[in-house]
Image 1: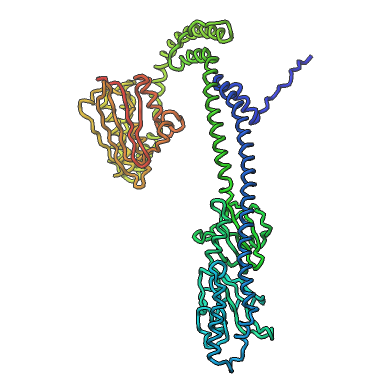
Image 2: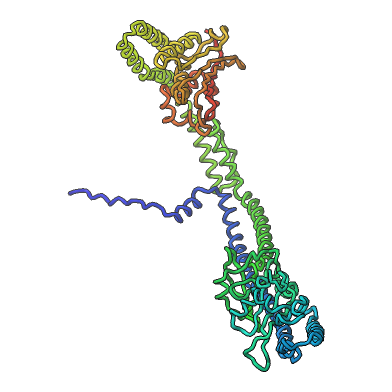
Length: 609
């Protein structure tokens, strides 16, 4: 009968939320877990309250600001309508004046000069009476050119001159009985115009023959008076009001210096409802509230634009205050939770601190437990485990001492075969070139090189032999790369009698050549070997002027096995050998930077042979 095994259950990978819950449950320390839970319980309601309050305040502030802006826009439009109504009424009186009509429609071929002078005085006095300085600043009557007072140029002007002006031509093109003129139509007017004025223009006709045009009338009023009314509509800081006329022409603005920084595009103005209610729009990338009102006596429209940021400034202040209070409450709650959780986890932390002793090289028992709860039982179990570990450490120390000697011999046996291969290839090339003398030198150098490398099985050799070992390697490499390498030995003779672990400096010189100097554009450079005695230690520096090593790579040179193996014998190999021989306080250290060359420092015990 075959034995049936139960099916193997495959564990499904955890999703992101389950991973987060798993980490919270198993990975986060207990005190931090309690602290996080308390903070979340307090922070989430506070955040929800802050968001709700901020949103409510923003809506209330926007409604209140919109209502205020609507009222101000309505009041400004009413002022402007009243002013324009008075100007139209004044123009109607002049248009229907029998005195004006008789003077301009009279037969000029039989018009005595005395009568013309009389009519001129009467007309000037009559027109001057409308110039109140509030609604009408100046009245201009354009009379037929045949009259002697047609060039009076105060209130009476030549009709022929008016025909050349922009406002006259615009009035004719409009086909309307009157035209409200912005400053752009008045500038350059031969009959006298100014960029700081606006005007109402209309033709005068013979009351007895309405088809006959006998003159023109223009009533000027000051643009500054209009600006003063528009400024009353700017009740919110940063808002701007302006009047736009036909053909998208700007008539007046509440703040001319602002250069219409938030004026709507023409297509937006054309689609803008003129009911006075404010609507949210985007103008030049900025969110604004916009309202518009038509001026009854003209085709002009008054528009008010309010930056939304100015409206929400008050709500932002309230929001900032709420968040400050929330942060203060959260800070107080966090501090309280921190101290309360500390009273709960203090014994756990004490146990954890003791359990971290092995990481620092110690192995101490925890103090006697107080209480019979879970923490007390953990302390007893840890003390029992410590006794067992100490027994195992004694056994392991004996075994490791025996392995140390075997590891050292294995590490010393890892001589890079690439150098032998490259040297034999060099000998082959020299033989083909017929350089027998160089072949003999290379063979002798190679033999001496390996004689020192083997050293009859010795592990420790004099520093002078290690320097000779490096010199032989340099000669062979310099023959491979003629004229590109320089080796400088800057060692006092008294240092040459100190002992060193064999094959220590040669791999460093090899690494300097292949990964430093040969990486330079000119593939040439200098290697300097110097030394000194520091606090009973022998310190040797191998310095090259190669391309250097990026600062972020330096910490990994003695950790990353893959990086170490790239440099022939391997920097980590040398470092491990030195630490095995001399102890953990010795080995290699580096100083380098991209484009600054590299300095490798060897620190060993100063022992003379």
